[in-house]
Image 1: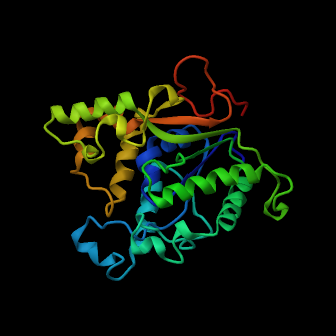
Image 2: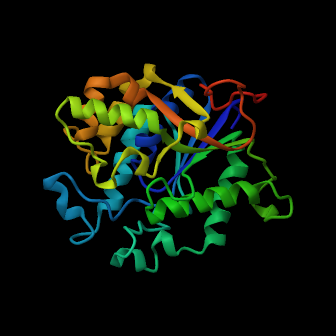
Image 3: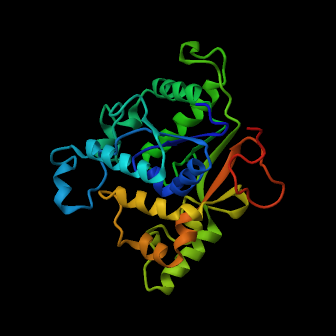
Length: 294
């Protein structure tokens, strides 16, 4: 880990990283930064969108998790990311499914994991990678998925514990993460997207959530700290999204939008800064490392 700039992203399932941060990841790899992805589960409970692969699902052969490792590998190749890992190793924690489902009560479900143990696994990665910047979800996991909420808890717990010299010295030298960001979408951007889809005759994929102001991961613009312009790498994100074929369909509402607003939808990603200092006094940052000496 000799790169001067190091970015660690903590996500719940394979595909979350590409949807939220794929262009950002590709941009920083291209700029020579060390980009590390830590994924907490294999996404075993995901809905299989490819009919010929539906027998991989949990109600059949229950082999979807292993298949999604291959999808994640292909996505990371598309983004240029060579350092990607699973929390505690592949399969240590299982996809929890949605709240109230049988999967959510399973003993191996990430939602039911021993939080101290999971944090320790993450601390080992933080102290090895020594990232100046860490990216994860907000306290609601973006939209309330149990694994996203747990990933938030693990990531934030690891940031605190990794900096504590008294915490588990066997896991490496203490390291303080300078800046922590949470993924988000500004309400103004979400509103423009919904209006653009309506103009195309497409229903909003968030219609069931109510008005734009009710969409949980769409936040007031004043809470946004960074808009990372990675439009030059939108093609890489598009390829990575398509690599997650069991989970993302290229003829869905997102692609109806991205095909028409393309570079902006695929290539600009937004963040809230919750730890550390903003790198610019006015407007949104364009660089997650802004203000840091690297």
